[in-house]
Length: 410
Image (tube, rainbow, N blue to C red; front, side, top):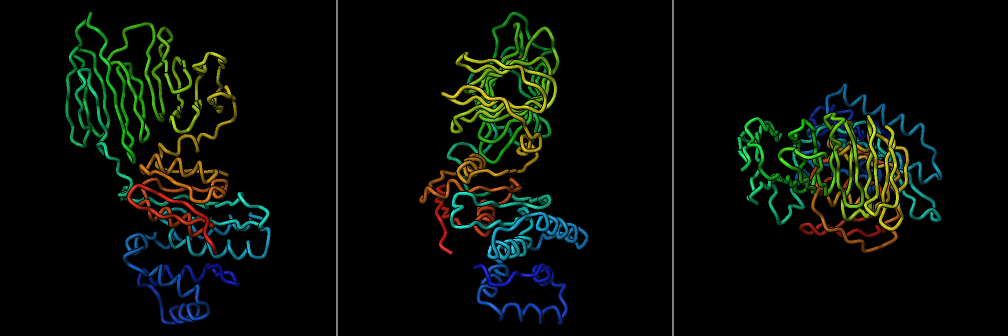
């Protein structure tokens, strides 16, 4: 699909104008000449103008001012990127022109590779993604697709959109308004045993809750957090599986403890993110402000973390401390995927969690292809996979929630 000559950005702009019914006769003639010049151009045109495939996405292209800004962002990225070969340069221009039309999922530039560079493909993104309204329809798990609250007696409550008020057996008031859960202990009876609650998120859903001490927790998809309805003891302890961002209410007399898969995190009052999915084989704790202490659950190491750093606890390999990029760490909270030189295997793990996919690599060598990019999390799964496939040498086959990945022969 890679032509011998680069596609000018003007062609992509004319395609955009055609799809918005804002094209003049002279411009239409240029498009017709471009289509006739190369079979690949004609194939691309047929795909872009297939209403069943992309019409609903393409008609949400931004206005002229926004379009101009996006063109400039792509051009700046291209001007600052070195190219390894003549073919790489052609590939870059081709992918940018094509994918700018698919701009709702992010603007990609593909950096081709020499044959000896196998396993080092890169997809780069320019600019910021535009909002997408529809959540993914693929990958719905067999369990509930609603956020669920497990109460102290074991009963399950679906946390839908409608405001509601619950009361726990100890008298704690639980309020659900505006997609957020809050706890009030004003009516709570004293001397009762601790009551535990658990919030569970399905794939493609996040949730915000405020604990009884005023701590705010944002829970990522396919995650759960267990916590008491009131913090009576000497510590405030919660148990996390998956990923969450915390803004902990300051209390110097009562440390806040997060128990993750492979680590303990102890804080007094701070902002931090913990990523602890069992399938990742590691815990990542990134500190944004304040201070906290991270200890491996094996008890082999304990470190005081400073803002801008993260602790990575890996099974069998101990703990390492490294710089953290706050934007990347909180991408999920801002409804984005952000990848920087990420392997395809790692990238697929992230997509699998969000969309509820089971990923199968037909060709193992593609696991080591590397990508850099920014994607809107609420894009349709197939659309997002098409974006990646268009700019790389991989093919995806999606059947239900089973995703097969293999090398593309181009």
